Length: 248
Image: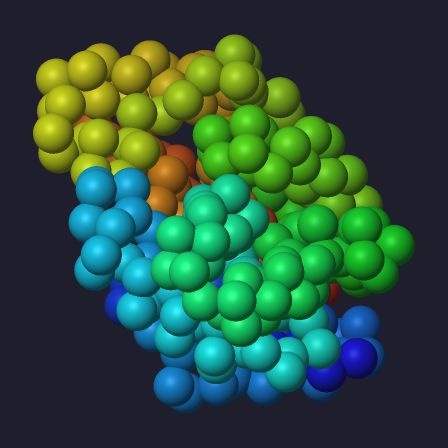
């Protein structure tokens, strides 16, 4: 299958390794990947902060870029949630019947990375090896909007040599929430402190998630407190393979 990778503006700017990892996993499974250079943003930041008029052309651009894509893969549940929950409303409010039709056609072809693997392709074992102690943080959009459930954990359980430990209070938010962390800094910091304590208590070497925004928030606190815990997007763990003698 030919898969169009929407890397998201967040990953493109701060976490380009995630996109590379997605490509490695999908190519390992026999798919071809394309990156459409005209892609920009899904419009989530504008829409969520009330700039509906400014978000509309960004949304229209996304739809135009991927109108003919076979499948669109996005390594961010928050961006996929934006597309599924708000693009139809944006199209209807535009009073453009062609735009509405394009959105309706595109929505079934947009997938978050982990659900693409499990729901679309029926794959849980992607051939990964990761000999580290790992805990998984379920981001709010993945848990509540996309309702991924245990899909990321099913993928992690198939990783060879991994020591997977459960994170206490897995349904609790890390406190990021995009601009929420800026506008409500005190509340966000308190939520973050609780989540970091939970991560620390697992004894994990690595905390993973399907959203780099949450992982950035978590890593900032872990790093400031000198906790020896790394954060890695799920795709980076799934892209890892056993080292050969030449690699060691």
